[in-house]
Image (cartoon, rainbow, N blue to C red; front, side, top):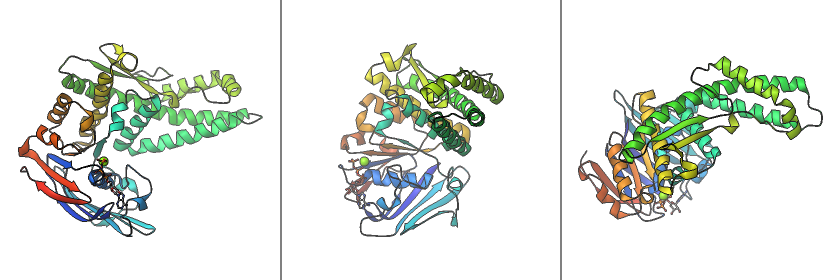
Length: 371
Ligand SMILES: Nc1ncnc2c1ncn2[C@@H]1O[C@H](COP(=O)(O)OP(=O)(O)OP(=O)(O)O)[C@@H](O)[C@H]1O
Ligand SMILES: [Mg+2]
């Protein structure tokens, strides 16, 4: 999968921009605040229909203008396509191959994008909440129905906790909530288990490459129900109901739900040691890279095409060895890399890299390295 060209009108600090891209490496170079991330933000919009920086569309429209347009031509193995997003005052339209779409899920999957930002380097170091959000986003990208299950689960969990906080807890109503929680919970547990197993394999291989075979990364699913490979949706449902029942008194006392998906996490080990407790900063960062980038191979396995990879500002956070390993190991994907450091130009093979030099909303110079 690759993006061939991009057209922007009134997008952030760009008036009117048309770019043609390299099918391998596209390096966006410029000083801080010039418009590098704005370009990758527009590419992300072609994939998800919205920005990764804001949920308010009007912030993306160029100051003192009203109508924004982003258009991108993409190629897949067997097809070409055009995605267009237009935002005007109080209206928004998205077209796939010139046809208006009604629902965002009709857009998803046309272009798969993986974006890697500096926050992702802290994925291993951060708390469980960040890792759960990583898991949720990744599974939703390859399986939109997962997102619906999760929304329902969270809604019911919220209602259950509200009930537990009330003066007289109605146990018949609690029964109803428990059943729904276990129903959606069991779907999600199984999908998380399967997903984690897949990314564990991929990230183990990636980590081995990134560390020259010195470190073995092992990732497993940490959950309160001891979900195992043999469990089916109905066994998970029963396990969950049982936990909720045997903890009911405790839940009523503490006025909150003790067991469930909302406590899930990942166990992350390097050479048998818990990397969160014993790993160095560098090990934690490399493990984060392996984990985050496992998404690329997973999308290829599930969708049949490699996604487009965006590296926004992560380059300057890595040492030269890791930068080189990263680029060499990912040579199958089309990349968009933003950096403020001109020195990074030297890391890339000139014959398959195009460099876009950016200054205050203009691409002032393009160094073309062939295609
Ligand atoms: N709606 C908008 N209209 C016009 N300009 C905008 C708008 N939103 C942001 N900008 C401008 O875009 C610039 C920031 O662009 P961007 O975030 O792409 O910078 P960058 O090159 O990635 O910088 P850094 O290296 O610091 O990450 C700022 O100068 C900001 O004022
Ligand atoms: Mg930026």
